[in-house]
Image (cartoon, rainbow, N blue to C red; front, top):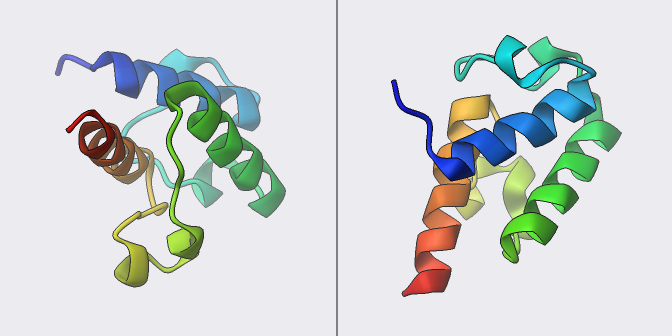
Length: 89
């Protein structure tokens, strides 16, 4: 599976917060499974927002309310791709 530039960047940010190498991050991994606590998750979201010049919805902890799912690496990538596409439109 070919990873996009967005996926590569998000994987690198998450890997940094998990103290792992990006190659050790699988798309189906959960944030809690990577050992990232709530503070680390907030730091990762801030880094993602800054890098992509986007704003993650405040209700991100409740994916049903915002559409931004933080449950896995793949879901974060998908949500950020959507926000980047909306911003470009």
